[in-house]
Amino acid sequence: MTNADAAPAVALHELGRAYGDRVALDGVTLELPRGATLAVFGANGAGKTTLLRVLATLLRPHRGDVAVLGRALPREGWAVRGQVGLLAHDPLLYRDLTARENLRFHARLHDVDEARAGELLEAVGMTRRADEPLHSLSRGMAQRVAICRAVLHRPQLLLLDEPLANLDPGAADAVAPLIGRGAGVARVLISHDVELGLAEADLVLGLRGGRPAVCAPATEVAAADLRGLYR
Amino acid sequence: MRRAVSAVVRKDLLVELRTGEAVPSMLLFSISTFVLFHFALNARSVDGDLAAGVLWVTLLFAAVLGIVRLFVAEREQGGFDGFLLAPVDRTALFVAKAAVLFLFLAAVELAAVPAFAILLLGPSPWDAIPELVVVLVLADLGIAVAGTLVGALGIQTRTRELIVPILALPLLIPLAIAAARATSPLLEAAGAGALPGRWLVVLGLYDLVFGLLAFAVFDFLLED
Image (cartoon, rainbow over all chains, first blue to last red; front, top):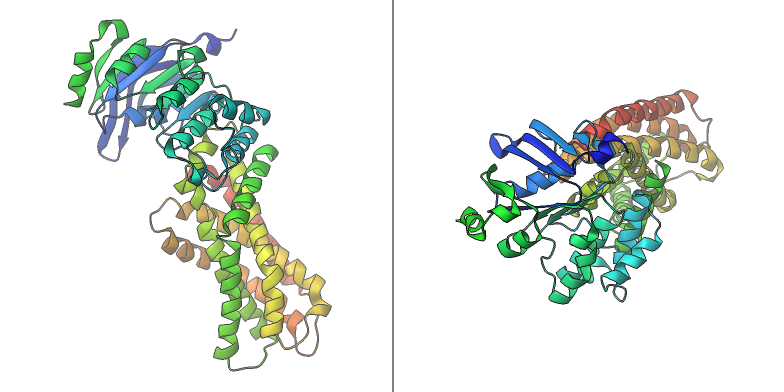
């Protein structure tokens, strides 16, 4: 076992990120163990998506130290790519390709057996519509395909931005083994559903204006405290 | 890297086959321009320097249409993020996009050059086809490399339709001069002359310099 294998899934120390003069994240410090779930709450513009994009290596941190799966970012970003699965607001899929073609494309990029695309589409109940262009699918169906894309390469850390958005209860049940606790990997979960997010979390981060207003184990945080972030 | 390049090339060709957004518009533009030249020059046919100039100016403007479209899906549909999350060399995206642009140009020229011969060209070009193919391949390589670099730069801005031609056309001037000078003897009314080696070397150097430049800076264009 290497040091990187034993390291926490995410370790942040005084993380800061800005867009020009506007501070998006400031002073975020936390440690997320492997296999645990961090739920991130905050109003629109609080810095949640920025945090996810920094952890995904898509944005550089401007201040502080960031380590993902034991690798320091941005210096060792190359080693983290392929270990992280990002489910963002955008599905990161091509509208003119079918669900199956999109997943095969990502399977080739990640050097994954293309048969896994079919297995995942079956797991989320998309086999029947898998050969239709993405632009002809409903948002919920596209979200299911996006979830398949995010877990296609069996990532060690899942970064999930409102993963159940647009999903009906049946679809939410279908994707649970892939992105829920049962997936057995560390997760950073953005949710506006306080009860649901709290139930899923081991650790809670509440952001207000990019700064941590709440950062504590889930057992020590009350839903009422988190609702205050949205006022 | 080969795996990532082939994945992106296959994806882009599939999207183009399905949507027909780039090649048909480039081809239509080329043929319309030849028709315009036919009437504007008030000449039944052209040859030599004029023919080479008309051919290359038209092909370069058509190429700009392709360059503008090259990274649109990556920008608008999250393809950049999807690619950047994969454990692959970022240069693979440059190589793949340059290959795609080269293939688009070749496909356009397969129809546009015969159309040019029928609509405008006086002398028969058939005797000089192998030499013409050499010039086209060298020039297309240069357009593909420089065009991919400019396309990646332009896609980061909101006004890519303006920025791409403004950046691409000045960069392509040396290539246009060399390609036209190399093509001119092949289209002489008195019959095809020898291929001028000096201008082929210029085209080759252009390809090499822009290839090295693109390898050096492309990664930075993808940084946030």
